[in-house]
Image (cartoon, rainbow, N blue to C red; front, side, top):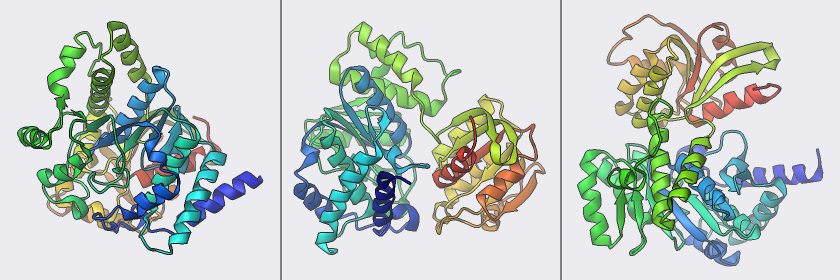
Amino acid sequence: MSLSDKEFLQVLSEMESWSNYEITAKPRDLSKLDGIRLLLKDLGSPHKKFKIIHIAGTNGKGFTATIISSLLCGQGFDTGCYTSPHLTDIRERITINNQFISKSTFTQSASLVLKFARGYRGSPYLSYFDILTAIAFHAFMTEKMEWVVLETGLGGLADSTNVTAKKLCVLTRIGLDHQEALGNSLREIAAEKIGITIPGVPIIVADQPPELIPWLAQQFGKLKVPYYFVDEIFDRYYPNNQLSSESFSKPRMACIKTSLCAMDVLFNGKISDKQKWLEITKQVKIRGRLELRRNVFWRKHGKLINTILFDGGHNSDALTALVDFISVNKLFPCTLILGMAADKLKPTLRIPLKDLCEKAENLIFTTMSSPRSATAESLEIFITKCAKFQHSPKILHSSSVEESLKNAILAVDKPVVVAGSFYLVGEVIQILENGSTT
């Protein structure tokens, strides 16, 4: 192991000593941003060095951020992008001109951030996400980014990323998720999400549940925020859009349209610009979100998986989109590997999870190597509590993710679907890529 790799692993280890919501599911005090503000001030206010596009919402934030970042790069701007979560490498969250941040740049920024954080001795409080956000800002400053696209981690108003001026805000689709921190209704969740807005700074609003649209318009009016609903403006901006629902999933289409509208509001593109932007959006992909791979070879067991679909979506809208994707792409009957965090098992998920399981001939409920994981047994009981499956799938319980994958490849003729958690998807990808060719 090289010295630089050793230093990279050392800073990762120290970062894990901070409270990590993704592991513990214990939300930090969302009312305070004192820690991140002090930390950024001591770092030289890196968050003030670039133009910012800020994205909040429930579904599609990361994909929208990635597309907009790619579009800005296509315009010739040096662009940073900050998203979450990551699947196999923390550097997935911080990209510089569409490339993972280098280990050396990450290590340098992280070392400095951690030095300041240690010095505070717990006052003010800093979360894991605060630390990582500060690392991203410092790295973007070091690499002299002109634009930065920020995805909120949780919520909006009191999210660690909501400490900057901004040129544009984006609101992706709102759904029920993280209710323990954000509220139990769509309106309560939306109120937290639109906390990223600033008077006079426009916001692009993706397709939303119908009951939210008039309320959002009313709120933006009160806040003096110029707003653009994608459903109302896209066809006017892109009358010959050449986007086909047969070629793109519904969630991907929504992210593409939202991103294109964002570019047009920012730059008032000419016809040639719009055509270039459209072509760029078609090429953007993101790992672990309706990601379909063919002919994946698992070298450890000498097995070829003809078709495997990864999707970490874990709320009702995301699971419904996954079921639609499986249907449209004729990936059924499939072998389904399903694992979820126990705190995600809300009553609103029973129907979409049952619909997903109905697509499977082989059902493998798995326990993940995470303290948040539901057990395989509890996951099956949760889904079938109100009604049994209409078909008779073969059901297996696996105590580990690798065991579930070994069971899945026994049915080599069936597409494999890995779903329910980004943590699960990341584990499976890591297992396959440790000595695999795809």
